[in-house]
Image 1: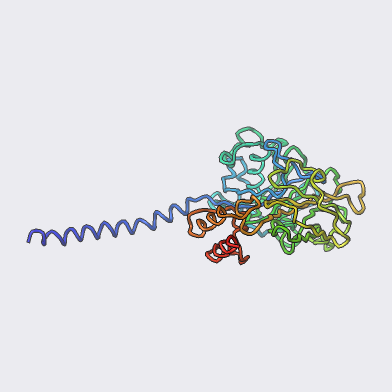
Image 2: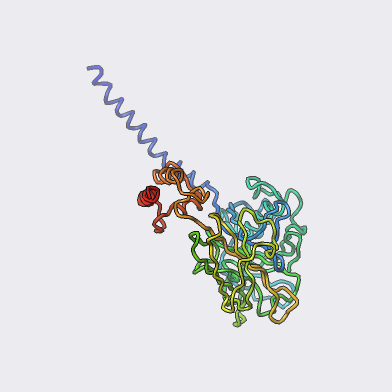
Amino acid sequence: MALLKKSPKKLLTLLLVVTLLLSLMPVQTLAAESDEVAKVTVYFSRSHDDAFEVGKGSDVVMALQKITVPYFDLALYGLQDYYFSSETYSGDGEYDGTGHPESNLDPGTAEFAYNKVTLMHLFIYATEIYYCGIDEEDAGQGYLYKQKLIGTDTFTVSGSVGSSYLNMFWGEDENLNYYVNYKYPLAAPGWGSTSDQILLREGDVITMGHFTDWLFHTDPGSVFNYLKAGSDTVTTTVDQGQNLELTAWLAGADESGNYTTGHTIVTSQPEIYYCKADEVNEGDITTWTVAGTADEKGLLNFDTSNLKPGEYIFAMPGQYGVERKEDIVSAPGAIRVTVIKRGDLTGDGKINVMDAARLYQAVKGKATLTEFQTAAADMNKDGKLNVMDAAQLYKLLKQ
């Protein structure tokens, strides 16, 4: 009887404890989620005239470098006046043609800008990693400010919110341009957006070109070259032995005069080169292996039979102007090409039980594959990884 009398109390106590724990769990989960720092993975190219730049502190060639940019407070760099405010805005209507025009934006607040990763974050983060050579885990914590590099030829920005201006970047002056996804970024028709108000999104490609010629932008052949494989403009995958068809394109100002971007095929028959991605050590593309010459329609057909599985960068140098024939007016363009042999997850050119075992473990969720391995493991080319791929690989091994 004593046990029976105590049981309801124990049950009630237990229920209260469980209820309390359950009520706390969502709050803790939400807190963890809200405290998680936003990160965005993009591709970044930086060039000078016809060649890709090499990061001074890292020796990394800046040809479509994949970089994951975390959010950090711009106040760590004394740049809180450039907090994100809005992607859409225009001028303040008071520009008299002298100096730099200003936008109609008010600076954002720290609270509003929190976890919004902008192009300015990329420029700072890339400067610290590639130009200064510090480790990724130490970047985004105010290094440039602490080392008194803000306001030097390493990184100088002026202007105001929505109208920021890069005076100096990586030891070079302001004679530069940058595009997002091969388009001049616009905040409104006829009004260009600047790095502090451009939000980065997964997979964006950022191209920045610096030029010796101060009139590079006046030439019809300016500004960013790029290569396309089908509809792909940043990365593409091809089976070993398959023909790779590339087309040379140019992104630059169209004839509207409203800062909109035009895309035209490069008909000047440029040379195209390639190099294994992990062996690129020269920004001068002409030192790479010649892939061939694009025809008058900008096309190059390349046989991949002799390429070993792996990632390559195909690129064309910046070009001389149509009118300014003695000056480079366009930046080099590139595309990352992954060559795979279906079933060869190790990339050693062979298909064996090691590849099958790796795929089986991945399908079971017991192993994580790289992007290269995932592409090679997709046996039926459906963009998914499952038992069907494992079965097809085992069937191939039996043959």
